[in-house]
Length: 441
Image (cartoon, rainbow, N blue to C red; front, side, top):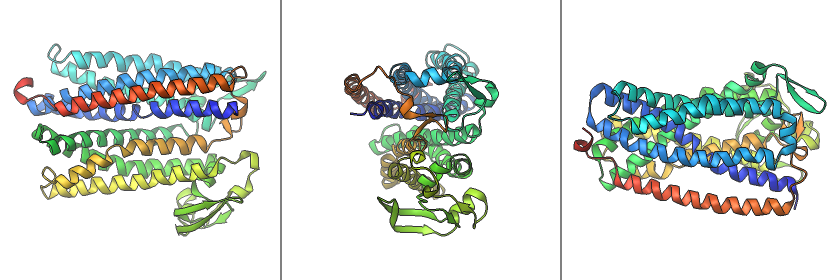
């Protein structure tokens, strides 16, 4: 089998599993800043109990995220040695910064946050929670800076077959960096809000720590609505406009524009047929995509037919991933708005049917993050570094299909075990629930 495909498959499995945990860690860390701040300022033991409970879940998620992330970085030197040789001078800088300026900050203060409760002042303890959230955010910043450089490379020149850094600021703050960072951050915050909401809904359904769970659910629903709206607009909107400007092939693929069109429609649903690529059973709104992308409902958008065949990304998976992400985003807006309505009606705490909805929907923000990642990364193909280095030229020449198959099967077995262990420990902690108020007062 093609070594390039196998190397891509292994990396997709690795990063796909890893990417389940950072969004929860980032979103949950910032929610804990609010919970611990409330506990500090009010002295209310119910908020303290909620903080102690979710801190344990944060520690568990952080540990699994670190373990899976390390494996991902090793693959740059094993399966993608040609890529590492070409971009090492550039790609290594943000990864090193992530380790020095973000990971150590996050992990160091996480220890103080977890074990310092009752041993340091409440102000210092709250500050440690804040630094954990800041560290997690900085980690996302540096990782996204590296990945965004692959999407819109800048601040470099190619010398003797290698990419050489000419401007650190230019490379880090490339044209897609900020919009991608803000969109991913709001998505992570949304994932954290739904994680908290799902856990609190389960506690209410089981009749455990109902006061703390009700407060957590109210907070998570309110934050979830805010983040769901911001994930769509302005962050998602501006990110789509950036893709239309900088990566027109990807934009045509995610929007299903297979022919150049003036007044391009916004496609809500379609079935893809090929060859040649075309859509059937289309449900669309005329001219909306042109207006969203360029502010002109009659703007012309290049279709797939305008680009060389060897520059076109895989069409079906790119289109489906993007549209699934959008549909899920609309679902999150609707579910959280319904929760706010129930809160206004003073029935959020007792509406068991809504608790079931929240519980069932709570994992879906992670699915939306996965769909967004697939649309971004598959939509960049056939390039590892857009218009600079092809994926086929990035793999290690000495790693064959046999080694790749063995490592894929080994990783799948390890990740399955890790996933089962994580769910088991998470379920055990959740079923125990927050400590009683008199135990944390």
